[in-house]
Image (cartoon, rainbow, N blue to C red; front, side, top):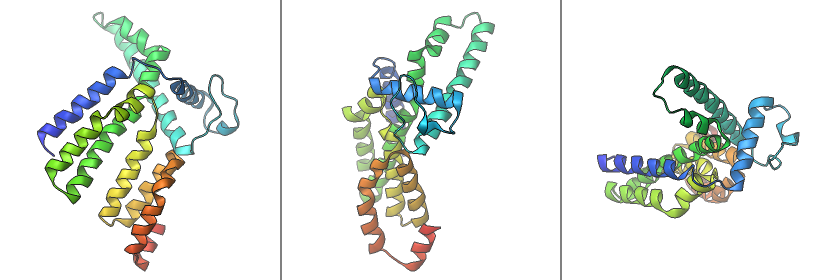
Length: 222
């Protein structure tokens, strides 16, 4: 991977960070309140709860584990910022006040999808490079990062599709390299984040059985 592509990754990441606080789509409120509820009341009985200011939980478990982990990390970062605010006179207190607000929490909730965007771009680079060459791989990666749907979904809308798409592309790369065990694990992770991943299953099954051997079947099953 060239230095130029690394710079593109950084620019695209910073661009998304700039956009993330500007707009709050109603869907991010569901994500925020699901995460807060998980942090306070835990995972047990989560799907049966009536969660204030949020729709009924409708994602598979792995998504909520990610959401919970992000909320716990947010609380740790907030605590660190508070200590810095108390002990460093030059630290801007308004930054802490914003970070602990609803807007700051929503911004932090968008970070997993933003990181996933960069991961998707890297996987696109790897896949295109596998079939074509490095130059086309880098062009494809850069194109994805700056297409409006990619940054709008994660940084503006706050949707989490990037998370499951990352694992779909990772499983496709494993498929290309005929790493059957990795394929099974990565595809399962994508499905456990969002069942929409099922749309690529027929393609994976077709390619898998085209390369079928009993040993591959055993490895993937295990």
